[in-house]
Length: 114
Image 1: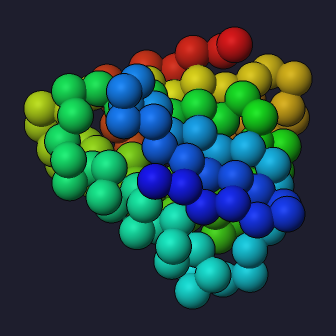
Image 2: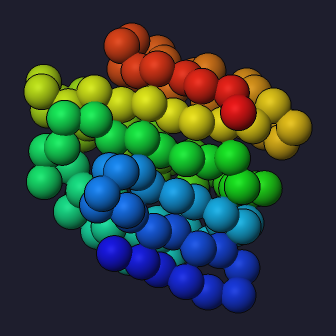
């Protein structure tokens, strides 16, 4: 599963059960995020034991994107059997504050700084 544009690349590796987000997600409004939401939903519906979410190469995520990410975390939380690890980079300013807030939505979410 993959979505690729000039600005961003979102993909899912079924072998490692890892979602990768790279580039810059500056889409305007929830409608433009629909393909990404569909990819995230497909991953959750597969119910892997662990979902890794690698954001280490995501340079920018706007408020609509943070909303999408938050809703995804809530969907994962509702699947009691699924664990989640979010991998971020402390070199990217927006990630430090925003990723810590995701743990409020899913207290057992693991946050890794790479």
